[in-house]
Length: 452
Ligand code: ADP
Ligand code: MG
Image (tube, rainbow, N blue to C red; front, top):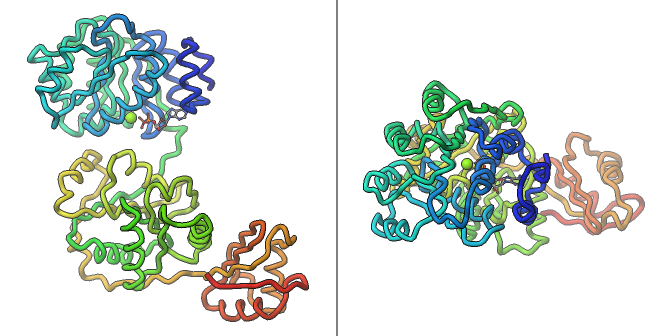
């Protein structure tokens, strides 16, 4: 699984190492040996599996930098994906100087693209419509093409690009390497693959990648807060992370939810480290059902069994969307991903229709639901003592179920740090537990205690 097993230059290997790519992903390990031999490859692999590098390393390997002509063309279904692929290719291309990668996507000035093309490029990443336009106008020549990549072939066809892709095929040189990537492989993709590929190696890594099971719902609304509360009433998630695009919004949304009787905490960049920890502990141990977070603040957060993810705003990129919702529906459990958008965000929301399993619903359909109240199952007590005081979870559990008289099932997660311990106590019994710990002892020792 190590990149050094591949016939790559030392400069490329050093760069991969610098990028933190220690081992190949499954699709890279299966595809790259054949890709580097120059063979056609058709790969089925899920989102986030590292497909860009699986073809990117290959096309960079084939590239003759001194020959300043278009040698590789990558087609992507959307401008956003083309930008992401170009960005990843630029990172992969850092090992060499002067590799020019140009994006050709719709929505950008055609004239400006003409200017860039006149200055030549090694690699073109683009969307079918715009690439075809340049081919038709002869501003783009594929005479020197070595590698053709069709990325996200299934989405491309879902979006109705079959005609453009077929027209582009007519411009490709006969002798070339073709790499086709797709998350699924249905009859449509098969027929395109058949026309494009020659004696291709077919690989499929989707079976080793455990898929998340996520119900993806999109609601158009002009009152996001009310719609969100109604969605909670409908789905009754045990816990949920709500993503906002700004930290101010995260803070304000948590406050507004509390006013609507939905218990929530916000985590954002303005919190001190200890405050951040208090919030994370409370969310993980069930002392708040809702965490409102920005992407940055949620980085590295690993909460198992997340019932729902909410995009309170449309994420800036599809990658962010995928990353966010990938936090639910893990390891076979069923998750729900809810995305809210207002009329002014409609155009951006339309891009998400490319995936047919996403459901677009009317927020009005939720109107009849009574609004739910969401209270935490537990309350967190902080004990001013930890590992350095030789305090163990068993000591706290023993004190609370012994002299304090609580039942074992009323005590939740116990987290012990160096100087502090957090114990989750069922809300109904919190007063009893608090009173005991404030006055009584743990392991014959008095500790200060407070409630979060
Ligand atoms: P896909 O196209 O399959 O959805 P991407 O190519 O966008 O996936 O890769 C997903 C993420 O994984 C990117 O952030 C990329 O930088 C990273 N990545 C790719 N290959 C590796 C690797 N071998 N080791 C570590 N990270 C990788
Ligand atoms: Mg990709």
